[in-house]
Amino acid sequence: MRLTDSETDPAAWPQTSAAVESARAAIGVSARRRIAGFALTLAVLGVCIVISLVLGSKDLSPERIVAGLTGADADAWTIIFELRGSRTVLGILVGAALGIAGALMQAFTRNPLADPGILGVNAGAAFAVAVGAAAFGLTTLSGTIWFALGGAVVTTFAVWAIGAAGRSGTDPLRITLSGVAIGAFLSGFTSAITLLLPEVFNRMRGWNAGSIASTPPEQFGFMVPFLLAGFVFAFLVAKPLNAVALGDDLAVSLGSRVVRTRVLSIIAATLLCAAATAAAGPIGFIGLMVPHAVRWFTGPDQRWIFAGSAVAAPVLVLASDVVGRLILSSGELPVGIVTAFVGGPVLIALVRRKGASAL
Image (tube, rainbow, N blue to C red; front, side, top):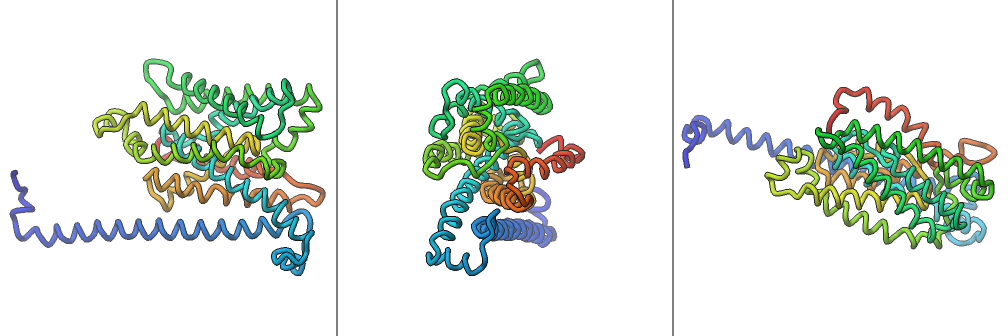
C-alpha cells in the first residue's frame, strides 16, 4: 500500500490529528443538535397532549379539570378522557402516519414537494371511501378502510406510472403535476357524489373536511394493523433510502436494491395514507411540512427523519385541532381546514426556495 505525503511526513501529523478532532467535534455538535431537537419536540408534544385534553369548545374551570383528572367529577372525567382523549389518541396516530408517509414520498421520489395530498393519494382514498358509502352504505372505519386502501393503491401506482413514463425515466416535477391533476379530478368526483346524495353528504361532512372528532374510539383497532405494518416497512427501508438519495446508479454500486426499496416504500406510504384517511379524512400538508422541519435537527439521514416526523407531525395535528376547537364561538373547524391555512404559505415558500429542486 502506498502512503501519501501527509502520512509519511511527521510535520503533517499534527494537522491530520487536528482535522480528525475537528471532524469529531462536528459530529458531536450534530449529535447534540439531534438530541436537543428530539427532546424539545417531545416536550412540545407533551404540552399539546395536555392542552388537547383540557381545552375545548366546552369550558371547564380549573377546579373541574382537577376533579375530572382525579375522578371526583364524572362529567368532567368523561369530557377529558373519553371525548377529548379519544381524539387526542387519533390525532397522534394520524399525525405520525401522515408525517412518515410524507417523508417516505419525498425520499423515494427525491422530490421535496412530495406529499400524500399533493400526489393525490389522499384524494384517491377519499374517493374510494365516498364510493363505498354511496354504493354500500359503509360509514364506519371497519368497512371504509378497505376502500381507502384500494383507492390509495390505485392512485399511487397511477401517479407513479405517469411520472415514470417517457425516455427520461422518473421525473419529480412530472410526478408532482400528475399527482395534483389526478387529485383534483378525484376530489371533483368525491364532491359530486356527496352533493348528489345528501344522505351520504350528511354522514361524510366532517370526515370529508379532515376531522379527528368523528371516529369513535372502539373503531381505532381497525386501523392499528395497517399503521403497524406501514411503520415497520418504513423503518426497514429507511437505511436503503439513504443510498437511493445519492442516485440510482450509485445506490446500485453500493449494493442497494433500488426497485425493492421503492416498492416497499410505496407499500408503506400507501398503508399509512389509507389508514389515516379512512379514520380522519383527507388532511393535507402534514406530510409536506413536517419532514422539512425535522431536517433542521435530524440531518439528511432518513432513519432520523422518519423518527422525527413520527414525533413532530402529531404536534401539528393536535395544535391544529385545538385551534379549530377554539377559533369559532359557535362550532369547530376541522383539522384539515386549519392545516390548509398553514400549509398554503409553507408550500409557496418551499416552491420559491432556490434549493427546493432536490433533497
